[in-house]
Length: 120
Image (cartoon, rainbow, N blue to C red):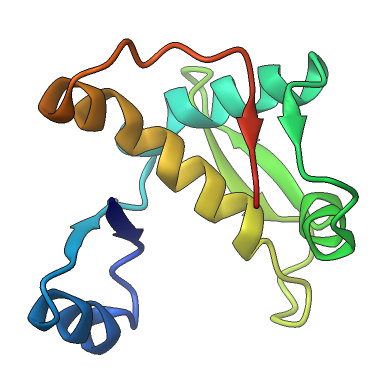
């Protein structure tokens, strides 16, 4: 198992996990890293392949999010409202995990293919 994280303000916690023998992987928070996983996530939402068992917090985060698109049609998740109380963290964590999947499967084996994503 790996713990993926956004490097912003997470170093202390991730360092502690690493000291405990856990595998920690930073997922860089930019368009080059997040565009393809964000597109994949959006497609899975449209296809009803994101399963979150009615989690109200996940729904709230999803409602606060939108996909920022640049001039090259790359996308990145952003908050609809820049007010810090409108969080997108659960959705962003899912996209971070999806960003890491290809390397995870290459390193640990497996096909990497799945028809859906499940948030527990």
